[in-house]
Amino acid sequence: MKKIIAVVLSLCIIFCCAGFSFAADEEIVKDYEVSDKIRNVSITMGEDPTTQRGVCWHTDEESATAVQFVIADKYEGTFEGAKTFRGSCESFKEIYVHKVTLTALKPGTEYVYRVGDDVNNEWSEIGTFRTDDGDENFKFIAIADVQAGNEENFQKASNVMKTAYETMPDAEFYTSLGDYVNDCTQEEWDWFFDKFNFANSNLTIAPVAGNHDGNITNKVNHYWFDSMFNLDAAPDECIRAEGVYYAFDYGNAHIVVLNTNDMYPMTVQQTNWLKNEMNSSDAQWKIVLMHRAFYSAGKNLIKPDTIIMREQLLPIFDELDIDLVMAGHDHVYMRTNQVKGDKLVEDVTYVTEMFNGVETTFAVDPDGACHILPGTAGTKTYSINDYVFDCVFDSNIVAECFSQRDIGDRGIFSTVEIQGGRLVYNAYAVDYETGEKELVDTYAIKKTTEGQASDKPMLPTDPATTGVAQTFNFIYRFAKMFFDYLFVIIPKLIINAI
Image 1: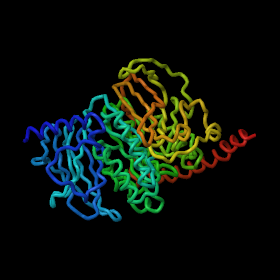
Image 2: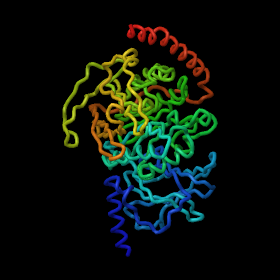
Image 3: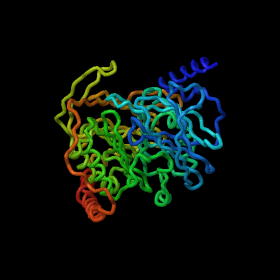
Image 4: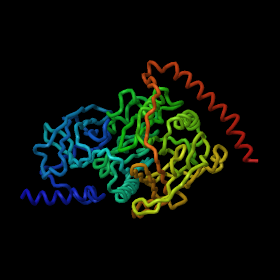
């Protein structure tokens, strides 16, 4: 009997590693009944993605908190002898939030796990995750702005994510660039986790907080986002009522997740932290994930928060040699050429090479950064605001730009693959109903130099020591924003209208 179970399990694990089918059609063998008391399970990055993971789930009643896990190759249909890690259970509004941090994991290893109450023996469905092996080759999926307000539209966004996972079944994690929900109700979060359960419980997520992920009233008084995911990898001072910022190394990349809800303007605490993170990293690739975008052809382009953030952060990004910036918020698709100092980088060398059997053109050691808005996986799409964009930016910086309304109201997902010094980005449009996809954009960068840490001193990140700087920062940024409106943006709009 054990041999039969082992054979069935082996096939399940093969499906698990090969594609989406493990989540939708295949069920890993188990010897217990799944409890309906446990929901909204997710796996997040630990401080060290090679050896740690964060786990979070919700229940309606207070209960014990435990995760049992075993190396997938050793799982034989039972959790007898599995490791058990316990964690916290805290009330949040009408639910209980359970969090466990898994440590001392083996790099590059597939695990089978379940979460639940080890006192009353009530357990979730089985999930899987894989730790980073630490090498220089990895892949991830990016989506943005699911932002659904009803169950039907969450299902449509879920269909886009399913196609993404079928397209890149060996992705090691995924990121959603903010605005998971629309009105930030528990019902909406439940819908999100239900429809995305196949991904959230089997693929590590690097969550980014959007402005809709804590509504105007709730985000001031309640830590919504921190109650949806285990963000314990972030230092305590980085977890705020309106979101969170954190960083992690993955392969040869240092990835920073910013909290762009920390605005008007972004605090000195967060910008100093960003500088410390990037300056102290010797990773070859430096990537930023955030919600609000610097460059966009959407409706938020000349809103005060966007102007203030762009003026404040663009010089910092240039100073830190960021390679790739991915953001959401505006529900349109846009990719820039290489940009530095708010200008197009014109002197770029290109080379064509084979990558995974496909002839691919790479920008070689380009200066500046590429900024990407990967559209939306959801159904809420905006129109392009070409007129305003041309009044604010040099249109030559735009490499690709379109509204999803112009391509048949399809959802979009993106993939990023890094192989050592080569990075390839692809974007796909997906039919919400059929899952049929079309490649709509691609871009690639090749780096021939290794990463190098800076010897710059660490900057203060304690709010108690940055208060004066923050006050000056606030006054200066607002004054600069009003100046830009009065003497730069409005005159350009008037001239273009004549």
